[in-house]
Picture 1: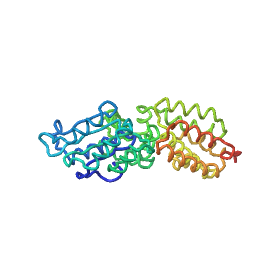
Picture 2: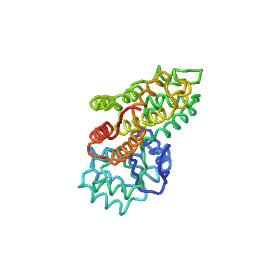
Picture 3: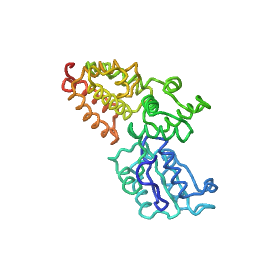
Picture 4: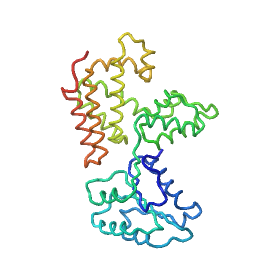
Length: 331
């Protein structure tokens, strides 16, 4: 599941960077497995939050030989809180790292404009831990189900990803709940997902189509604020919008005479949503749907470069999507 290069035993420092806690856990375990035996971890693994423990203290520990193990791993969270004053200490350590110590820096995001962030990105082996796109999340959900001894169709896995988003940890936890729920049946259906998994995200994404098509900007912003309040990340919302626009583009390409069952098969959407989706698709011009992907891609790149105000990036995206250049008269 990990992205980037697999951690190697020889590197003195790693930077686990990304918001997906499941991927960070996996990467961290790979580093620990490569460097410290399980029975020695009580003595050779230590955790520090860098907003509570001075970096100088951590680096002093890094130069002390570990007990009962040839190597030690120091796990360092809250890296984004490191002040610029710590830059000289980091530089000195990186110039002559202790050969028996592995430092593991962790952060959901870093402001890459700071000198501390640039140094970490330059001197650490960076392991990306961002949630995958829809295709990657779908593959992960199917793999998780297989690992848990469950049977799940692609359509049901898509329902799960649509309901939960692309957070792998959340997908894994919900599948574990579904395993308990289905019991000996071992098969997870869309009906099981509908019963056990919160439908708020799935319904919200469909509810966005009409106000986007009709340029009701205030309503779109209100719906997105509700998603943010419910814990959805700006990056996750952009992913939802990209999924919605793909659905609209595919729906628009279907012949008007296509029966509902055929549309449901092509769009892989609940049957109850097919007619509204086809109706919503006709409110957009094809070129406007295509242009939306350019705007969504730009917003995704900006958000993943750690902007100072992610919500402002999202609101700017909505303004551009609901502007007259993006939405035309219905077909």
